[in-house]
Image 1: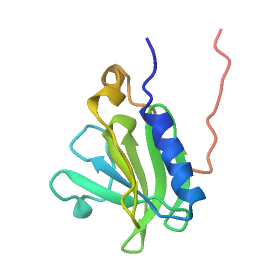
Image 2 (image 1 turned 90 degrees about the vertical axis):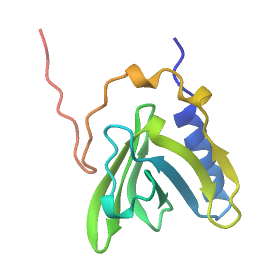
Image 3 (image 1 turned 135 degrees about the horizontal axis):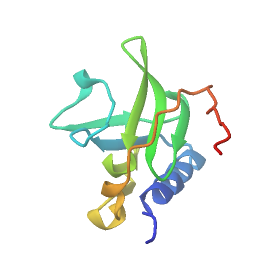
Image 4 (image 1 turned 60 degrees about the vertical axis):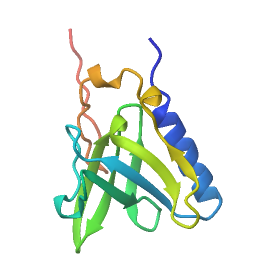
Length: 129
């Protein structure tokens, strides 16, 4: 089984937007399980977030999830969303980007949710015999 291409496309569009000195925004489906965003910013089950370098810290996009730190009303928060919750990435300035369809979501629904890693911490490994 192939992995979903959504995280790869998301990262590619993010890099393209940044390289063109534009502002990347993502649209998340907040009704999916394990999405952690400020509840007061959700509208109609969705949230739009600025993920530019000026707005967030410690962006991590992998095949399972997107996560980063952002400040809302002066409070720092770890934003976390399974990759299938990302509905679109686009530029604030001209709206160019990509809307993801079911085809890009692949078979992610069956994958367990990975643990959240606080930025600046390292996973601890141990030997299992």
